[in-house]
Image 1 (tube, rainbow, N blue to C red):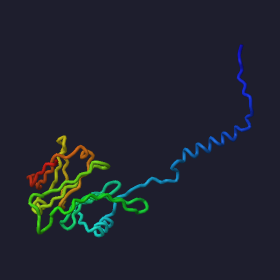
Image 2: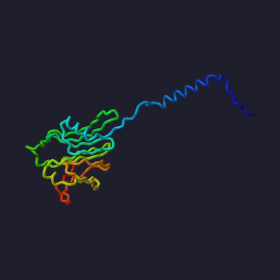
Image 3: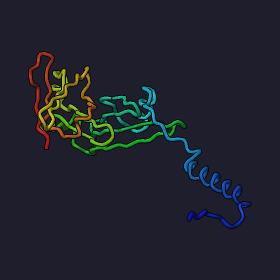
Image 4: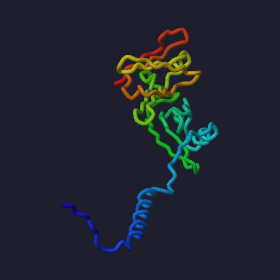
Length: 194
């Protein structure tokens, strides 16, 4: 004995059901349609200079990333800091700055103990800014070497600047030491980091 399945009822509503499923699929598929993802770009040198003038900062080192610009700065010897700046497609500026206010660093009251400041960020594109406060140390320094917690070293030339910004994914592991060296490899200054 074989049984045949018979469906009782009307299939007149089937085209409407298919239309409903199609519209529902389009709505689900288009969730977020019309929203263009925000794309960020680095600032031009002129935009960096304008930003610096507007905010009363003096860039010490500038590093361009694929989606933004990093600026290590000081404010006429009163504070130091690091800014991450980017512009979106509409030209809107996005900024994330950290500053160490009133460090007592200025021409009339320079602290002997403060030779170097190290600022790091381990999220996004990991980076470290090294700012050399001591004028004699800055004049003698050709390279900055950061030694990571695992012993690996990353070397960056100062190119005549009072500091550097180093970007490397390995920085996320942490920094053990910063070393300033002359062109001949002589150590100018060494500082362990906490």
